[in-house]
Length: 315
Image (cartoon, rainbow, N blue to C red):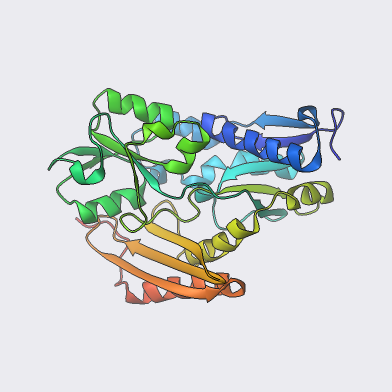
């Protein structure tokens, strides 16, 4: 067991949300194993993505290197032994881990819905024609363009505090955040309304925290096994298999959500043209044991319906 002399080092990015997730992980480990706070050390790691995001705050994530830029240094520290575990937002994680690392612990999933955030407008349906909406998420932008082609969409990236400041500075009339992040920050009141999945299907793994470890670390494996939420893991098995079969990245608008449905799972998924002009959607019902196979099968089905160049930008 870790102690003050040999604490378990928890690696994380330094944003308020990332720190909140690391603190939640520590609190769950303390409670489950009866350990004091001093048995853990939270190690903040600045990633290449953090630096580039500050420099290019209004450019698409794909142009500064993609979501992997926010995990590389953390995973390097994990592989080198500088940290023992790494806490991640699962919707930001690539579907494959580097050799020697595993991601098999998930905390109980938070609210999966997108939050509609605006200084003066109550809900998405109330946006006036031609309103400016800010979002860095290609998935949200494509979904919104499909539903409301009259709106003007602008790049809008940064942590929660940065995005709120942009709204109040008049850069846009509204934006979207994840309800899960707002809840974990104690800022649920920031959301004017939550958008149901039937209106905007969320990102794959939205609301879930994953904890990565070295494959050959029995101490970390035993500690994390005790706090793993099986239900969340079952849902993510379907969603991430769906994403993996689509070769999903920050450059492809993909949405997916699995929920428990009796003794099995109900998985919904959709792919969109980046300009929102077309959506292809489908669903699967499956047994828990078949979650990954169902996710991959749904992805293949949607891709079979997509014409060549479906994910390319039009004119």
